Length: 173
Image (cartoon, rainbow, N blue to C red; front, side, top):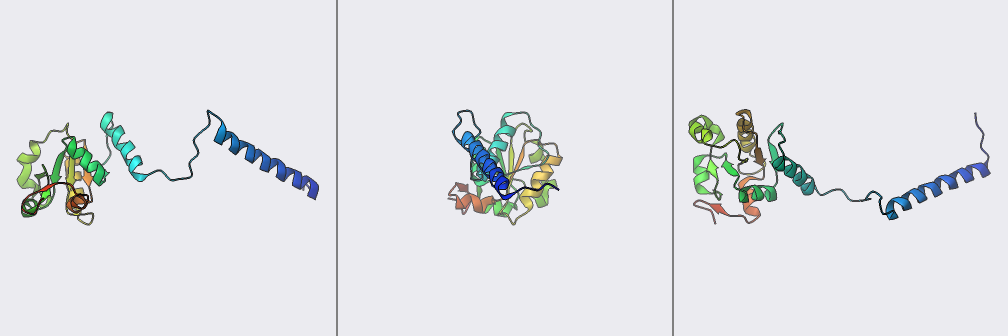
């Protein structure tokens, strides 16, 4: 067993502390040092980075992409196909501007509509809100049918309206 006297222990502690301080100062002030951040990255910026990589490159998704309200709006503005998974009656009452209706519960009745969609375009499915699972189920249905660019907007029509975005239909603004 190695025995260290009190004086040697103090010297080792000071050497360690000074080395640590010198390393941190080098990281902070050296012109070619790494950026040090004490904050977590914004979840939206991380999701945006993934979305940009998928949109700009030929990356194959392994599952439908979950997007937030801001991203859904960007998709809509870039002419993505917004697909409402709710019933025709709910769609008629109010839906995201420019959306089409393909109700998940009656998907077999909408085969012609599905066949008319382009596999090159992004498809964004939505429902009422995060507790409604129809948008996710419909997104997976598109994905299983070979559509490569599928996103699901879980906040749904409620999240869209809460953000102040335009809706159409009987109750739309």
